[in-house]
Figure 1: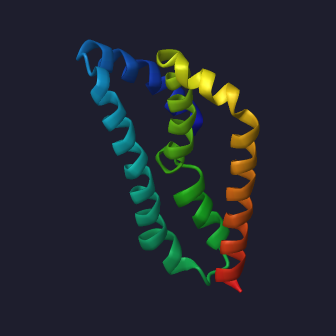
Figure 2: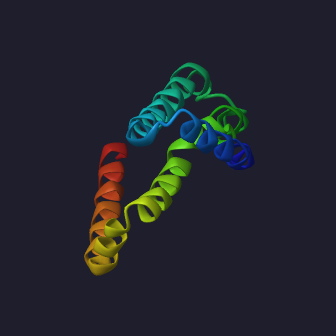
Length: 123
């Protein structure tokens, strides 16, 4: 669950600081983000999708896709990335605050586009 992530997060920060990862931390973060997508895809393709027509598919989906922390790593990493950007790059926070209405509108447009894309591909 998420608790595992937040227990490991301080240790990860300590290790990055100890080994003076500095600017390479962004590459580590990006790598973990992509790895989260790949792991979730593999879990779906190899463990969940073969059981798609079975009655217990919901339980399998929760066990394989929903509950494991590594499958929700990308969402957790986004939150940590935003916090890191706000902390270590204050000018980014100023830009976001200056254009918050445009960013909110852009987010809404992306959300609607994603909904329409998913709706049209399913239909």
